[in-house]
Amino acid sequence: MTDWLIGALGLMLVFEGLMPFFSPGRWRQTFERVLKLSDGQLRFLGLCSMAMGLLLLWLMG
Image 1 (tube, rainbow, N blue to C red):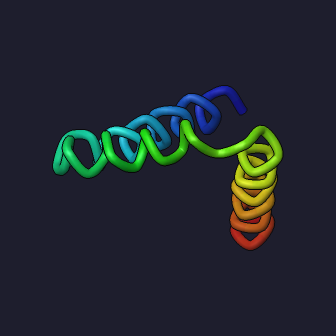
Image 2 (spheres, rainbow, N blue to C red):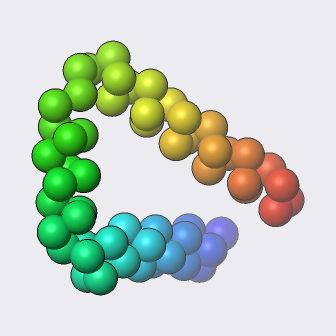
Image 3 (tube, rainbow, N blue to C red):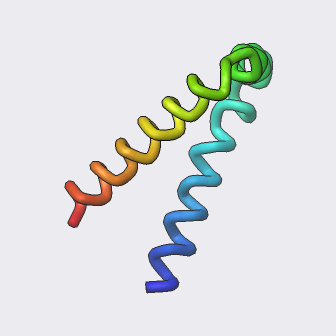
């Protein structure tokens, strides 16, 4: 169980690093837009992200 959790964390870090590596200017602009969102909007984005992740995990299982 620990192996797949570490693998999933590593894969997440790879995906998180793609945009700042390939397009740092666009990543910075996107990050500045995210900072302007309200708490409710950020929570909604977090909820959607978790739901999509759980859906993907469910589809894989």
